[in-house]
Length: 446
Image 1 (tube, rainbow, N blue to C red):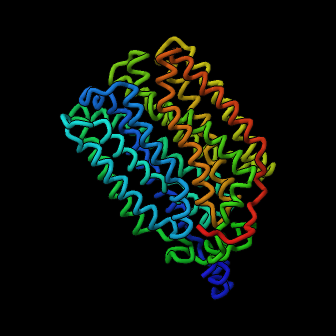
Image 2 (spheres, helix red, strand yellow; image 1 turned 60 degrees about the horizontal axis):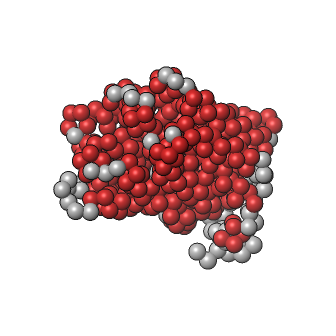
Image 3 (cartoon, helix red, strand yellow; image 1 turned 45 degrees about the vertical axis):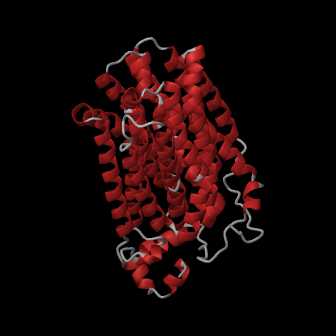
């Protein structure tokens, strides 16, 4: 039943006099939790990387292959994961995804130390973990397109992606503590258990559409319906947008390129920042764990802040300023922070400055997802999956390129390359029109 059909059977006084529920924000909170769990399960290996490399006699370059394997699986399954969410809905797809990645997190810790070909077993396990996690954000964006009014999408996406900083920021102290007391394998099993519990709760409390949830009041349902697509409800059976139409969109390609640049920069922090502080800046294990938290705390704080600022600018100046120009400006600022942080001599000050770059970068996060939800509507999972594939390709490149550049030219050069990509990513936003939608000229086949 479409939202407007559901509303036709509700008395008018029920819409105006009943207290409005806030179910959509409760579910956004659980998406924040799942987002945090996803990054806990993917960043744990960067913290445990030194111990894993020592136990299995892996070089930094080989460890980079393991990091890249996750991103390869994650990137390749973005589009199938997004299309699956468009067809089956975010509730089941996310629950299945969490169970999948919890299983492969546990399997990563189960590889015996003396086994032949351990490197390739790690590569396979991380590739499959990435394939499972690929559904996380396309499915979340499909949820946003169905549940969140246009005027609230910036802050909603901001809270979802605050989970990135929360999960990644929790990883260094949690994994370090468990490693010091129980060894690195236990930390992976704990991460897997947390994920399984969170996925079960999501499946119990979530529904694909607001009209399917018993807790949604008539007034909240009316508010959601009026706020989606400028007050026009989207039919439940509307066909998905054909891939030919998606791939002809200049906006999709511009956002995807910018997100490639975003992903390249972000994954320096997710993959290498902890080891950079320990091996290059010569901080001890505990100090590295503390300062490695800073970029992720900045991400957690700046995601909802960026979403709030974006929504307010949209209301005052329009979506082009609130989404596009804001994203371009803060990505450019992130590049400046990277340049300054690479040149700072003190390890602790450098950590703070580079964390500022991570925070500035994530002020743009909600813009990417809010614009793709508006561009694609019922096909938002597919389009945002395509966009996110670009980010993960960027991450896959940086996982291997960053240590390669650092070994030949130094770590300063690695950060300068990332800053240059910030400039290009900011310029790409100037070519995006957030008011334009992708026209569905023919029904999608896949």
